[in-house]
Amino acid sequence: MAEVIEDKKAPVEMDGVKKAAILMISLGPEISAQIMKQLPDPYIQRVSYEIANIDYVSPKQREAIVNEYLQMSQAREYIIDGGIDYAKNLLNKALGQQRAKEVIDMLNQIQLRERPFNIARKADPQQLTNLLLGEQPQTVALILCYMQPEKAAQILINFPLEAQTDIAERIGTITNTSPHVIEKIEKVIESKFSSYVENETEHVGGVQTLVEILNQVGRTTEKAIVSELEQKQPALAEEVKASLFTFEDIVSLQKGDVQKVLRDVNHDDLVLALKGVSDELREFIYGNLSSRAVETLKEDMQYLGPARLSAVEEAQQNVVTVIRRLDEMGEIYIMRGDQDAIIE
Image 1: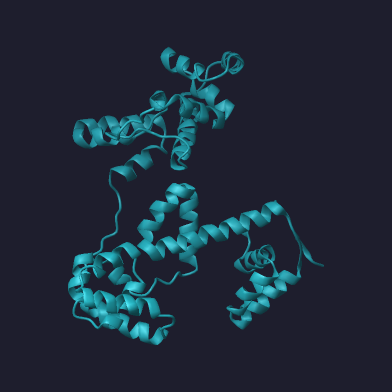
Image 2 (image 1 turned 45 degrees about the vertical axis):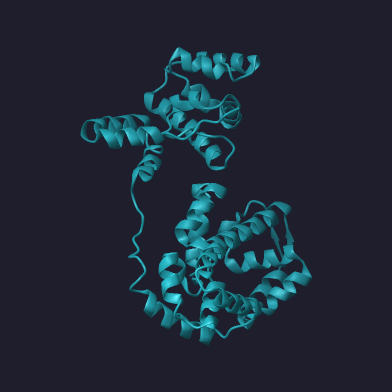
């Protein structure tokens, strides 16, 4: 009996072959046939079997898997263009931190192969220029084909005009190159570059990492840590506070942004979050809601009665989480440190 793929089964829970089968169904027979030609025989058989045994895929499930494919493809291009840190930065902005991490993790699981001449792509442009000036035009052309266009341009303009033309001509006429030849050239070039490329270190920690952690802990813990930092490292504390967004900082948002936040915030979280805050902050929130919404909010707060501090802090943190998510998506704008204000 053929399988019916319903919405209740999340795409992340499916194995890769089933996802590939649904993607093929979604893309249609002509495109799928071209893709199938590129697959090894064992995979063709497995994907074909899955396609034959799927009777129906819901529109929602189809959309989710196509979107996942597009995100994975985009992430892979980002990694090829600028490396893993570059990809994480762009994906964080495009998808939010959690989804970006999931996409990167999935790519790591399938053992993504780095593009050839990766060491050259990470090297300083001037160092590359100095080294490539002594190479044959065809070698330079091949390496530039695998580099970021803006970086390749920086290198090309440093060659004499005649050499520029020769290299440009070879770039324009390269169609196919044997993987064996690429690998051989890559090894030779890497041995020359290795002494010039800066020692790579993994970026961990720092103020932004601390801020991201503090934005996820309870308010009591957050305040205690910042207070201790003020005593031990005042300069660090000031830098953290400049980037740390708290529930009270909602008053620093633009009016339109506040209204976007309030539309996305869970009503029960907002009711609980306003317990114990200053009258000024409460009035600020009321000023960004309709009169009917304010009445409902006041009534619910009255019926709520006393609430535990931990519950209030959790609700406030849920509101902050919404604010940070909207900021990451570019829906709203959070002022950080000495950034310029928005001019209306």
